[in-house]
Length: 188
Image (tube, rainbow, N blue to C red):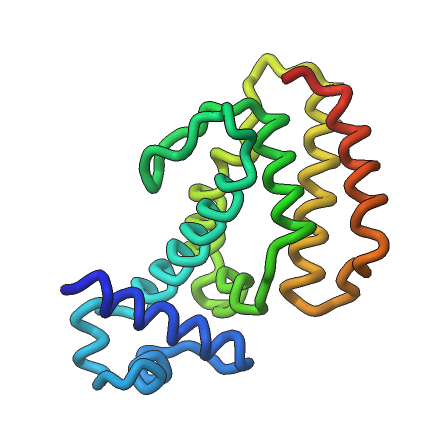
């Protein structure tokens, strides 16, 4: 199995989603130009393919968000490594990405198959948890501020990816200022 073929399969399957299609082993194989058995060599089941898609999307997210961390913050050392930047830096980077990144309906991959929604959302939550985790001792006021910024960023991302009332460019700066005001009450 080559990583290149796997990546090509995942990219093609995301293209199927972005075009409004339904991902199946057959549609993914057709999109990448493989036979179904050729695709199944890499992804033996639809669930394996869909979990691979979630991982593929989240890996891209990790790269994008990590690139927005402050220069002094340690970067990701592995695909599933724990982050050492504090919650404020992580959520600020996530917010920045949600305000400036490019999104596609394919980013909603975890919602595309009702029969697999539970394992897909579990994987999504597991992979994204390091960005949103707060230490147990975090005061409620700080939690509230960080949660409000995360909810705002989540909404920005979802609106853009779904194409449902995305935030106009003229409002992005003022929204960022409001979010920064919330974050200013959070210790580094």
